[in-house]
Length: 79
Image 1 (cartoon, rainbow, N blue to C red):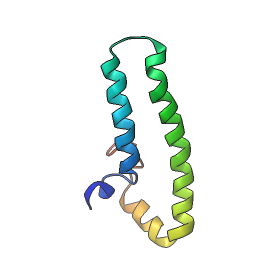
Image 2 (image 1 turned 90 degrees about the vertical axis):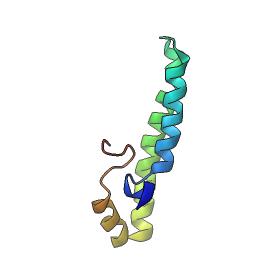
Image 3 (image 1 turned 180 degrees about the vertical axis):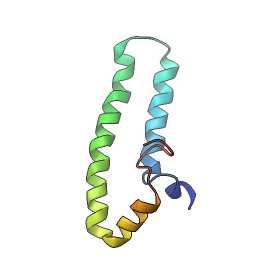
Image 4 (image 1 turned 45 degrees about the vertical axis):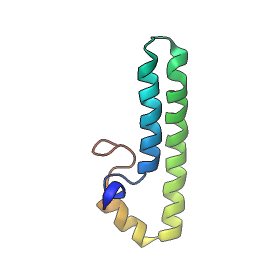
């Protein structure tokens, strides 16, 4: 229920959303303004894979049940 019922890692989603908003507010087309968001996206992708494996090892069948119920990994209704 709540945020954890929408996606499995809402804390990372909010962090990514904050960086995305700051990138949009920069208002320029320069690559360096997008670099922090790109870096964070790559970092979160690797971190999510690691966290998923740790949760599976720690919670076992309960994590599989939760993963089947909550399909979205990071972005609700998308990914």
